[in-house]
Image (cartoon, rainbow, N blue to C red; front, side, top):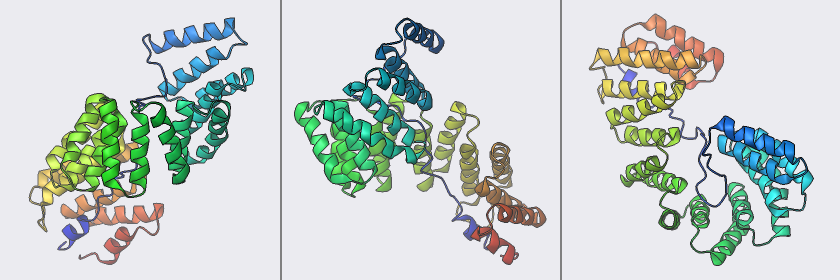
Amino acid sequence: MKNLFMLFSGLLLLNCNDTLPVPDTDTVDIKELTLSKSEELIKLEEFIIANPNSEKGYVDRANYYLGTGDYVLALKDANKALKVKPNDADVNFLKGYTYLKLSKIDMNQLDKAFPFLERTLEIDSMHTNGNLELAYYFIAGKNFEPALDLINRVIKKDKFLARPYYLKGMWYEKQGMNALAISSFQTAVERNPNYYESYLALGSIHDKMNNPLAIQYFNSALAVFPRSIEVWRLKGMSFYEHDQYEDAIVCFDNILSIDSTFEVAHYDIGSSLLKLCYNDNPKPKNDSLIVEALVQFNKALELNSNYIDAIYNRALCYEAQGQRTLATREYKRILTIEENYSMAIEALNNPMR
């Protein structure tokens, strides 16, 4: 047991890259729904039935689906619109943009966006969204040189738009130029004080720099989008990394109030409780926190039975309670899922650690 704390100190595998839907906040025109979803959808379908040879109904319904995150359905409508009006810049853009949204779920969809974004600019070289989203495509693929030309083209056309500066911030950040990235993201929020993505980016950059301003920017993002699981988690992890475990738990609890099935939040709470329990001591100072942590790991595993990190941390709880047999069972279970999980192997090979 003497090295249990040392083993625990490196266990937190908080998955920073869990990807969650991010609201668009600038030039792409996805209209806000003023009616209930069912009412809006009924009206769109009625229009399509009455006007089967018009691209407008398909475009509007595709935008509706983009707004609800139903990207596959949006793509189907974009295809229908393109059959009706194949040489329309906006329709080509819609299909390319839909592939960009799909790429956030499946990166294999990213390259499918290119021909439609390229076609958009062949039809209209000054198409604002076409230039910006093609720039995003290039940045995502780390093809930086053409991206900057496209961004600057839009800024020259309209310097008051926010998204070009956001994308320029991405351009700088991807190349490690953090000071210039921060300046560009700040310009974006000056242009649009509700630019969620820029606040998120500013928070993330400052967090990587261990700058406490990160929390301020995460709070600004939450003011725009208070139910953002992504920001609540980043904020919680920032607190966690600075040993502010109670504040971290508050953030992770907020995630569960939004989505009670998000198993990672249970894992994060359990891991924070373990940190509070040990607090740089080789032995737990509060057995009740071990029990609370165990409850959270159990909940995570009810939602995802193969959540290896939760299994491992549950084993640590059993170790702390002196239940070595139960801990051993958990380590062995891990190896049936991932045979090279080094910490489980070490735990089994060094039972008196």
